[in-house]
Length: 229
Image (tube, rainbow, N blue to C red; front, top):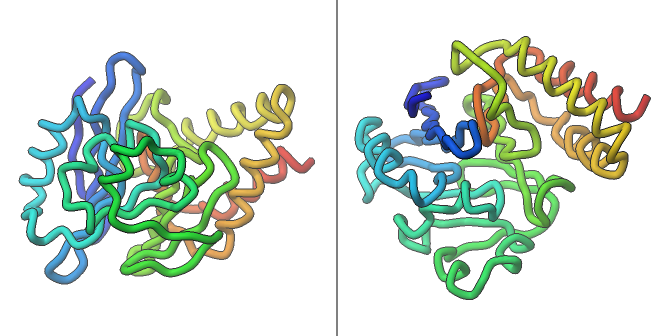
C-alpha cells in the first residue's frame, strides 16, 4: 500500500500515510482559508518525510499555517506537532492534561468545554476514545473531521472520497458487536453521534481511511438505532 495525497473537496486536502504494522492508513487534513492554511492532525513521527512532502505538494508554506488542530492526543495524530510553532497548535484541555510535560510544550493553545467555535472551525467534545477527543466541522465545506470516533483504516477502498458502502457495512457490524460485548462503549459511541446530528455534515473525514460523502445524518441515525434498539 502507498501513501496518498488528494484533494477531497473545495480547498481541502487529505494526506494519508500507510502504517504497515497496523495495516491501516493514518489521515491528516489541510484546509485553505483565504491566504492561510488550517491543519487537522499530523501522523506518526516516523511518517514525517511524507507528511512534509505532501504539504509542499499542496502548496503550504510554513508562514501560511495559521492553526493546527488535533482531534485527540494519540501519537498517530500529534506525532509531528513539533513541526509547527506551539502558538499554532490547539488541543482540548482534557487531552492536554494527559500528555507528559515535554509533549505539553508543543501546544500553545487549549480549548475547553463540550463545544463551540474556534478560529475557522467548530468543535464538539466526544465521549469516547480519549478524555479530550473532539470532532471539528468546517461550515464552508460541510466536512466533519471526526478523528477516531469512526474510522475505516483497514477496510478496503478504491476511491478516497466515496459513498462508502463497504465502510458503512463494516461500521454497522462493528457497532453490533460493540453493543453485544461492550455496551458501555457502544453507548458512548452513540452519544457522540447524537451530539453531531445538529451539524449539516456532507463529508465525514475520519482519522483512518476513506472519506464518506452523502447521507451522513441517516447513517448516524442508523448506527444510533443499532445501539439504542
